[in-house]
Figure 1 (cartoon, one colour):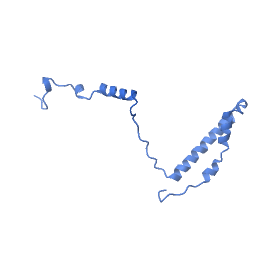
Figure 2 (cartoon, helix red, strand yellow):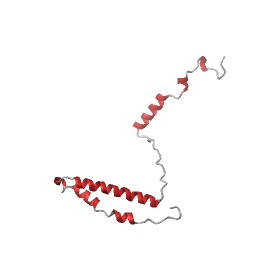
Figure 3 (cartoon, one colour):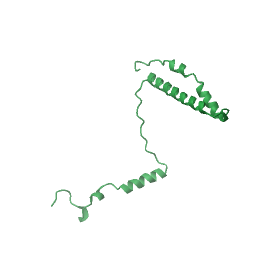
Figure 4 (cartoon, rainbow, N blue to C red):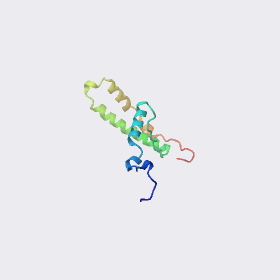
Length: 112
């Protein structure tokens, strides 16, 4: 005779019967999802960059985007030169981003 607990009601459970019911958990998940229950949310990883580094990265990203928008504006056909899209592109391209890049944010309390 094998060692271990004795079977209840005289029959042993199979390995699949011992596992938590997958079908029941899926059914509970679907019912919760349909009812508008809480969704699984994952935490965003903490940003370990200093504020000045984040500032410089943001200005660099804006400068790259401005260059892309300038390329888009230059590629617009003449028929679209007076549209809202062209006006918005011109507004973005006229922003003085080199002035933002030259601004140095203050250091903060020895953490930067």
